[in-house]
Amino acid sequence: MTTPTPSPTATSEPAPGATVFVGLGANLGDARATLRDALTALRALAAPGSFAASSLYASAPVDSSGPDYVNAVARLRTALAPHALLDALQAIEQRFGRERPYRNAPRTLDLDVLLFGVEGDRGGLALADERLVLPHPRAARRGFVLAPLAELWPLGEIPGAGRVADLLADARRDPAQRVERVAA
Ligand code: ADP
Ligand code: MG
Image (cartoon, rainbow, N blue to C red; front, side, top):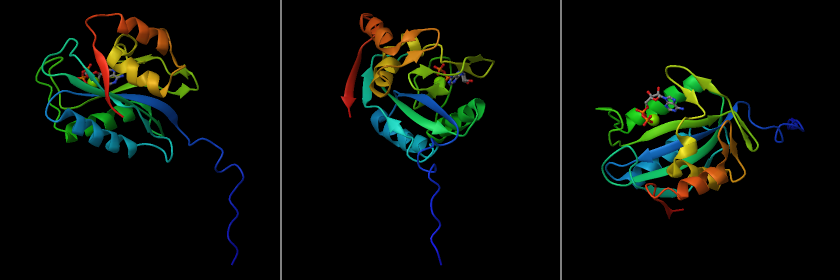
């Protein structure tokens, strides 16, 4: 018996699908433990070898209430289409006991599609319908998104908004936004 020879391109081609960034946030219960478990759940959606997670960050609630948030960003390649990815993220939120009693209520876990279809330093699809807006409309203004995003994508540029590094510098000048790295 002969061992099949791997095709020369098999390991060099990127996995099919789109590169996406997902934002994670939690501020109820053991938020750090929730984020670690949620990152594990997201890893299961990723094409093999495509998953990366930022450090965890603590941030003061913005337009929300309760204790500090814990935030992170994950990058992965997925074969899912944008709305199917949103469905998958909302299914994970449900597993973590997410309730939506009112807008911007404190939450056990929030998973947002920040960018979909990122290629290199340029980032992704523009789309807006009743369920999904891409790029995520608040990503470019929120330090708790930009700080972990900059860790994974330091030269990245959000379409229509600008360079992540510049946007993060702007957010850091806003005294209402406090973001600090809490764990690797
Ligand atoms: P928040 O806006 O604070 O994340 P929710 O998580 O309750 O609040 O989301 C409200 C709605 O936002 C969701 O039901 C979803 O349909 C919609 N939405 C629009 N764009 C996005 C996106 N890029 N990622 C996640 N949800 C989105
Ligand atoms: Mg959300």
